[in-house]
Image (tube, rainbow, N blue to C red):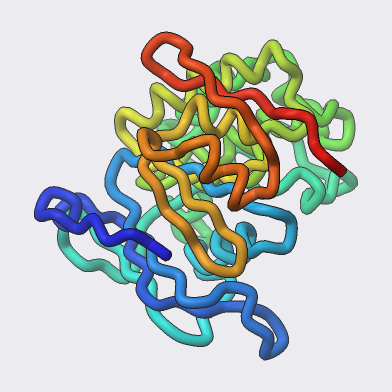
Length: 263
């Protein structure tokens, strides 16, 4: 079960709070009694088996589906608000690569909510897009259609769209998919820098990357188990994910290695 750790500091720093939440599809709940308090500048890793409800939880946070029970609350500097600005990098397989749009236009679309429907993008908007394209290492590809990109290039463009609006929360659903190892290191360095100012929620099957980069972990498998990073043990992960691992000391951070499976 979710462990209550609500001291005064945590309460004041909450940005998303989920209470007794149930959610699912076609009158069948996937998530049961979910409680989670996400704070400002948190770097939360969400792990769990396929079908356990990770993506469902993300969709509830993004208001793409409504909970059947319970509630989700948002805060801005400790004050309750109706919603907050969030950037979202969806799973790669949910993207239609045949859609006729360029890299520049993909990233620019991340600023749609910052203007009215019929107004034009400003010079400041375009400058922000150019800066983001440079940050993503996509300068030579900005005019190319997304159908011409490799998987890793498209992921970088979509990440650019997620961060270009300077959202308070950035949600990344399997960001490692199709990203080459060279850019993967840059990705996590970039996320570390972003995390100094923004909350990040990272959903991933890549347990190693999650454990090495996040501050706290939520394991979602119908219900939710929450642990701060310093309480995530090898035994806990093996129990929750049915995935045997070894835990080694590695400087100040633990380094976890997957053991051989018995099946």
